Image (cartoon, rainbow, N blue to C red; front, side, top):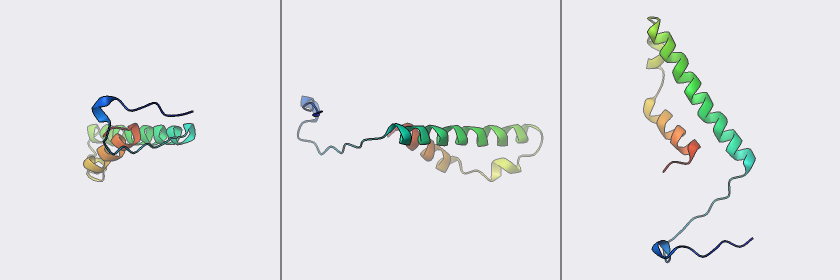
Length: 73
């Protein structure tokens, strides 16, 4: 199928289209789930008096990877 014309608001702008296959979407969803599980596990350990796990995690990198995986800008 053809791509319909762009809305007037973005005509003339450089656009990059990227097809994401269903398999790639599933892989990204798995990444999101993994990030959440690791942070939840580390948080549980911290509540039990073992905060060392949280010190091993990089919050900024986690947010960047999470945002990328869900397609956020």
